[in-house]
Image 1 (cartoon, rainbow, N blue to C red):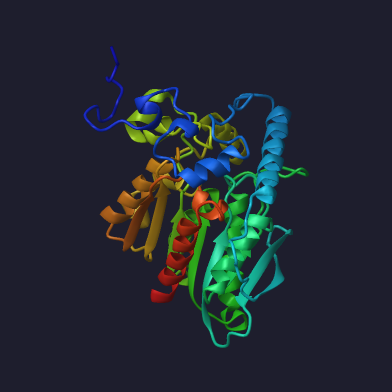
Image 2 (image 1 turned 135 degrees about the horizontal axis):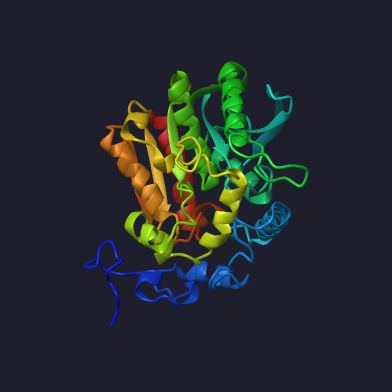
Length: 369
């Protein structure tokens, strides 16, 4: 007999691990076939490896595991097949600006622009994913993403914010958020020099957390007029990856349905422990925007929130969309079927149609503001 007492919607159709706890990506019929093949090539079509430690492990063990995770994802991003058949690369210029932060460190900004295009252009401020904790701003995937966005006719500024983990030191919340705010302040003050008009914040996963949190911070501090729009992809915003099963099913059932599909909740919970080590910000919207209220987001500029069907994070993005919608914020929400977490920007070759579609959509969103 199947126990449905903990299912938040027992009459709804069950998918993924809610239908069969043993399901893996390779056996989930919803998965895009080309994405399945691409994941299989790297041994990622099974259940994602569980973290060997929990958030309560000694700090040095946590730091070692997070460093290993950083290296593993950087290695994957470097090895992914990337080019499209018969692709002609667009001519995009790239330079680096350095912003001196009040705390005394430097924030690199990678500025991309279509070569030979005159006149002011809309600007996308891109904040990369990695749970606010891992991955480099200037790696192969993030650089290609920035170039492809710029090729549509935009200026793209990729922010090299402080990750919560580095091999030199830890930089927990709010370090990354403060860097994004400082970068945005510099970009706003150099609009004429950069040749930009409208300014859109865009990020995926942890980057989506930071762009949503930056907008929330801007509203609190009175500088929201600097932001013309926000485009948040597969947002990592609840911090709830270590919640008990009952709470996950009650609030965010995709954390159970899709756990282990490319991302493991236990691994994400270790990242949470690095970003907010004491847990004192567990329901602070600037740390975890999932907890933002309608009052927090009222009056925000237009937003787009996209989520992917086979992503453990799917439901927290939908929840944020609902909060924006209830508050009267102009917002569009999209569910990309058949895709795992951030596949539509990281698996460029495998899901080319989805990748091109989201690049077009970000440009269209910025251009129409």
